[in-house]
Image 1 (cartoon, rainbow, N blue to C red):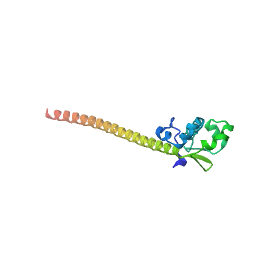
Image 2 (cartoon, one colour):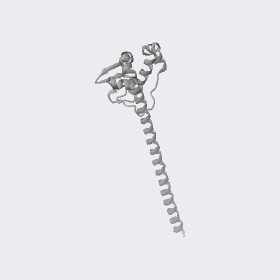
Image 3 (cartoon, rainbow, N blue to C red):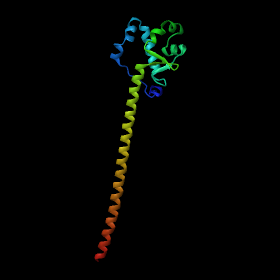
Image 4 (tube, one colour):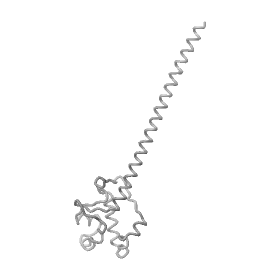
Length: 154
């Protein structure tokens, strides 16, 4: 699933405040707030990558994504990348992947609900058109039959 994960249509990334505040990563950031800046930038970049939650495993790309100078990156990258897994030439962050997966599930559910509502409206519209046509035909036939009977009585 994470290989095709795409949340680029979402301009925001949910931040689970209590989860973050209780994390070891944030504890490290209390001691070095600069690391927090770089970590949050990486999370944001990974959010809009495809697949979401990953970034190309290249120091230049990662330093740029973190908005960190190459010199500072060399000094801090081990702290900044704690919690990221390396595989398939990318670094992956399990929490960003988890949040993106939840977001994709909500998007799919909303699309499904919207499609069902659209279909129900269309069926209702078709039903009301059919009812109107049926009423018009019935009225026309009844009106014609009635005139015919009146004409027969004379």
